[in-house]
Length: 269
Ligand code: ADP
Ligand code: MG
Image (tube, rainbow, N blue to C red; front, side, top):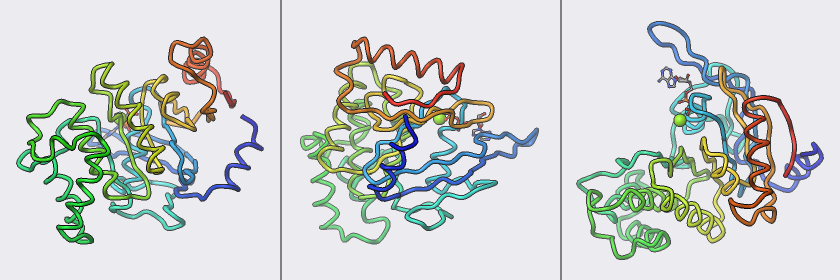
C-alpha cells in the first residue's frame, strides 16, 4: 500500500478513534507483562478494521484499552478527539464467549435491559429498538426465548443485535465467531457484512484467522507478538476477492502469514 493511499483515506473520512503511541502492560505478582508496545493507528468512520495476529499478541488488550477497561501505561487513545478514560455506551463489545447474555432474561429482555440500563431510553422505545435489531439478525421468532434454549450462533446474534441497538460510535468484536462451527461461522461473517451494508457502523474486529480478516476487513493491521506491535497494514479492495478458494485469496493469505511470522512489509492487495 502506498502512503498516498493512506493519506487520501484520511482526508476523506472522519477519524473516530486515534490510538497514539500506546503501550499496554500488566503488573502480575511475578513480573511486568508487556502486551502492546508503542502502537498507533486510526479508525475512520465506516471502517471495518481488523486486528489480526496470533494468540497472545495483545489484540484483546488493545480492545480492552479502547473499551476503557485497561489504562495505557504510555500514549493515549482518543475517541472523537477526546481521551478515553473509562468505559461508555459509545463503545460496545461482542465477545467470543456464548455466556454474554443474562440467563434469567429473554432474548428481548436482554436487549431491552442493555438499552434501558444507561438511563437514556424509556422502556417502550427500548422495546421498539430491540425488536427492530433482533429482526435484523433474523431472531424475530425467538424474542421470548431464554438464552439456554439457543444455539451458539443464535446467542452471538443476540449479542450483535444488542450491540447494534445501542448505536455505539464503535463496535468492538473480540473473536465473536471463534467458538462456532465452520458453517455457522461463515454464515455469521456473511450476515455481519450484510448488516454493515445495511446500517453502516464502524467496527474494530479482532481475529487470529487470516481468512476471516480478509473476508471481513476493509483494512487489516497485522500484529506480531512479544511484545505486540503492528507490523504492517493491508488495505482490502472489496472487489478483489470472489471466495476463499480463489488463487488470489490463497496467495494473499500466504503473504500475510509470511509477514506475521517472517518479514515486515507494507502493501495493498
Ligand atoms: P490476544 O488477545 O492477542 O491473544 P492478549 O491481549 O489476551 O492477547 O494478551 C497479550 C499478552 O498479555 C499475553 O502475553 C497475555 O498472557 C498477557 N495478558 C493478558 N491479560 C493479562 C492479565 N490480566 N494479566 C497478566 N497478563 C495478561
Ligand atoms: Mg484475545
